Image 1: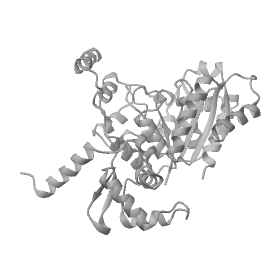
Image 2: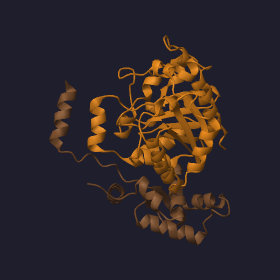
Image 3: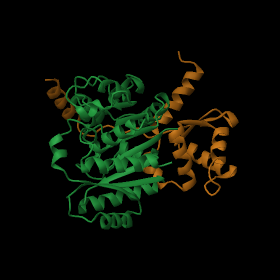
Image 4: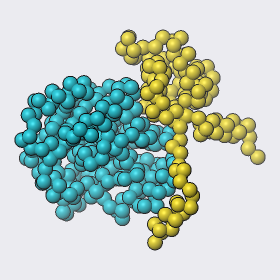
Length: 119
Length: 263
């Protein structure tokens, strides 16, 4: 029987699978959100102090204030475009890209193709 | 952190894979640690330029995407393999370089499986980023599918340098405008352009350069000629290594220099 941790982990995984952002959606984000998402795409996961440090390392005109960073992280997490594991300063953020869906062609077409390819 | 260089063209047939393979080879010969990923899952081809076929390919990006192996296990050591090359004079020159290829599967069933089932895009991105850190790469070149699809858009979004290839053709000019717009809206910082398959002696180099740079507001790094020699090579070898004095190769090296100059 799965424990509490397993169930929570499964819930997080389910949420990751259901939601997520596409690369094209990134283009439509406000600049502050896009900046964070691009950073996260390269770093894969970061905790809050690391995000603050990355912001501080940016040129002044590109930097987000702490308040803007916090607001942006909240928005991205609520949309399930970022996944937050843990709370407060220990929270770790991970980017959540939408899975590429499979073909919508009728399954019979794929079975027929598989049969042909087996030969 | 290593740089991601995405090579893209809006339309097919521009010479994207040939350019990617030759640029990666030039970077490796310049002493860089280089990876090349074929994200053209639907119609992979760059492995041919590195002398791999269905039987010699072993594990592929498809295996990684289906969770069957780690990304490092898919990296074929081109530099090691080059020492044993018999028929490819160009590739032989890569012996001892730090160059790895991550091919996509050329097996029909594997291609159809990805198309049928889709895949986890997070896993693709994590694989690419981990490859850079695990292999300590200076450059990761991504060969993309022409036009715009999920893999291509992701590669544009994560790239430090985007090189767009176009032919002097009105369809390419319009398509390139679309890609440039998308790259700008994804905040790509270094956008470079390259013309391939230009009819020799037809264009004034400076005029064409000015025309293209004015249209797209990005630097044109090279104009590579349409070449029968290149067609005759038929992807059997890395052209710029086999024929280093050819005009195509000289111009390719100019593009490679522009890529490597980006800070």
